[in-house]
Image (cartoon, rainbow, N blue to C red; front, side, top):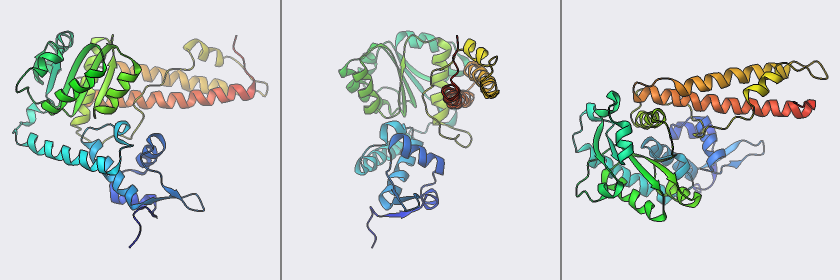
Amino acid sequence: MKDSNQGVYGIGAVVKRTGLAAPTIRIWEKRYGAVKPGRTETNRRLYSGEDVTRLGLLRSLTERGHSIRNIANLELPQLQKQLAEDEQAGAMVSGDSVSPSRRGRVLIAGKAAATLLSGDEGLDSKIVGRFDTITALIQQETPPTADLLFIEAETLHPETVASVREVVNRTRAARTILLYRFSSSKTATALARAIPGLKLLSAPLESRQIRREVLVQLGSLFPTSENPPVVPEDIPERIYTTDQLLKFARISTSVDCECPQHLAGLLQGLAAFEKYSSECEDRNPQDAALHAFLHRATANVRRTMEDALQHLVRVEGIELD
């Protein structure tokens, strides 16, 4: 019998056994350290039986709404326990006889948030409860069950972690959005790690941005088509301004290379599409999820091309006035 830690599976075999795409496996490995495969003499990855089990569990949990960022480094028994709890909760929810038209139930804790999200034809029918504060929601003996929990808080403190966890457990929410104004980075990090499926948003935000985030989270819970490729969730900041790109487009290098101009043109186009996709009108959760994906994907391509332009600038010794 083979040691479960022995590297015996190539990437193709792992894809077949877990149902994950090869690029997803590599991203989870490189970016989040989900697994640490061995290597052959020719540098090919070899995955152990335990690696395959971990990846299968991670896939099941991410499909249930957990962020890979929050669960990638959990021990195998912790992953198994979390999946068992999710399956039990899923069985309980299925017994509620929720009709398809009521899927995507939103529960709001926060007076300003309730006002911002009210009067929206696409969301009003999904809101199953509104509470002025998270404390008011906690005090409810039998709070409504929800798919998405939206919590508004002026400040975050260590005790907020316990309060949010309690509300998430009692409402059975698969995803939670927490909009806050002030917090230490330590408290925010603790919350993100402690609450699976939590999305932290820093106020102030425009109502359009808040509405889109709600729709994106709902769209990720109830996809209607094949999931898009995995891309980082964060939007990288721009390295070059529009004015700088215009200057690059007009300069020439010592070897008459036109690459700076070409790269500047590509970046101008990417920045324009990035802005366009972030401003597209979203009429339903699927539209919002698609446009959010396009926004993130374009932003990450833009950052890659900015890195390429930075390298070219160093090699060519280009300086902008």
